Length: 114
Image 1 (cartoon, one colour):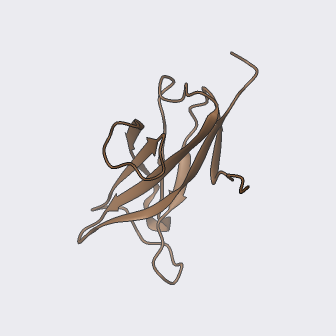
Image 2: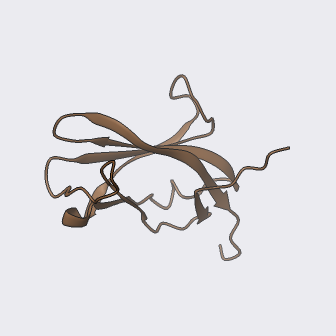
């Protein structure tokens, strides 16, 4: 049986930023200083047909525009998820198109400190 491996792991309740880098097809960073918006969606199901299983959606922030770095920060309430595997995608709206740039597994693991 195949085992899920998370691309991103977060302790339950932690609110640190998950960061990403937008690159072109050759791997060079894209300057996102202006004209870009970012959306992160976390779901219970891998391929949802509607928003029923969506846990939350975040709007991204530019961290370093010239190097293409942007990120998403959940609130304490959003980060208080049951320890489990979930699914996420990241969608970028640029000057000329909308593109899903990443889709993968996201894991919340149990912390000790409450």
